Length: 342
Image 1 (cartoon, rainbow, N blue to C red):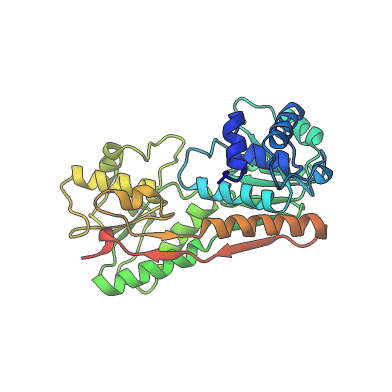
Image 2: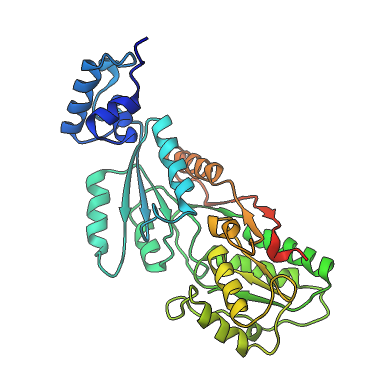
């Protein structure tokens, strides 16, 4: 029996990605020469789903720009998020473009010209925490949805939306429960609480979870070094900061799983056992949280659902005009593992 011709088989014949072939066959933007190659090969292979009448350049519904402050495709947390955005755009016939903006080597004028030339209908901003860039971005007058945001102190009359996990409430409940379960009151936050809104909210969640405890908490009992000058990936550096504390806390609450893993390594250097002598709590549920020992207790957000909410929110803003700004929070599941289980 003859095998059915699929997008995958066409892509293999041309040495292209399935995503590129799918875009060409669904009328989304790809370079014209690429489109011609795909259509020619699809006809040669007698691709059953080929409908030349509906494959027209510019038939996409909206042109969406995904702008990020750094490359995201090699960071495990963002892979399902970006994949979900790409899938949403493909399913709903939107064109998706990506732009990495770095203020140290990219003038904003160049980015502004790109947005104007692209004629983007809406913008999704991921890992964009620089307040100066955010203000300039909003001044472009395009509908914008941010995935996470700058931590505070930004004022703008522009309307925009924010999508994030319910960071503060998630950490508050976890800290409250860990206090009650293990009778500990001394907690230390590890991470730059001014890095972004999510880190700040996680820090505030820890402080709120300590309300009603028998021991007062001071910022001097936290490791809040600026990530511009401190390496949170260095176990030796964090071990040095831990030694500066007046006491070894009962639990380290970390800005994310990456920092939590480094804290575990730092405690190993100091011969402090996790979880017998100190608990460690992360956030994000990336591979490092469960692939090494001890496995990290963390919080998990359905990133595919988050990407869908991000896009639905952006499309609503594109189609509804000057509506009030919104902050949509998505529930995070607590995943208890070895680092908080005695």
